[in-house]
Length: 229
Image 1 (cartoon, one colour):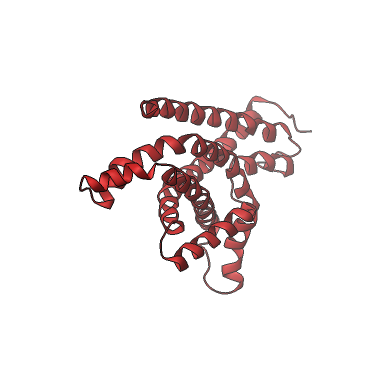
Image 2: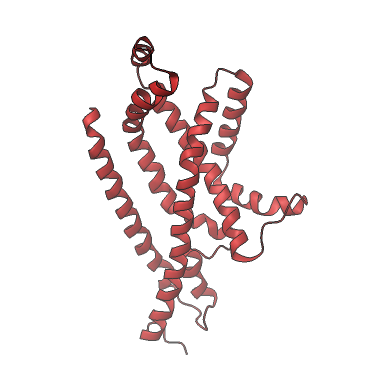
């Protein structure tokens, strides 16, 4: 009979959870690095004066925001191979690559709407004042619009980033061995251990700690930007 909570069992479980949490962190940071700039580009497309580009961009954003992220992960991972477009690299690297692409596209679309609201929320009079002073469109965006936009978007962006922390658990749908997958594996059988429930619930500590750190950091950022008020 397996002892469910011995020193060796705890070390085995903790090592596996730490390994899974590293995958979770990797997915989180890659998503932010890719989605933040891509979201800004998409927001420009959704505000473009060129109507076909504007409506195409908004249609893509509507589709991505209106369908579940888990469905997008499954479709992006399996459909290209089924339709013989291309195959993701085999093993864990291919799963990580596919899920990162899915997360970046999904969160870029959400970020784009936040960017768009922030940009359109800056009074047009200030932009017109910049034109009167002889500033170029790029200078107006950098020195007038961008700084005020950042202050406006921090609260909603913070909510999305916190959601991203928890959404990383959806990567397990294609068997990416993130922290939830690792915790559940000890229920089914992993490292000669089966029937353990506590590792799955123990993963909540990882998410609570990570969410807490992210919340504090974003709160500090919001305070630093308070001089715009």
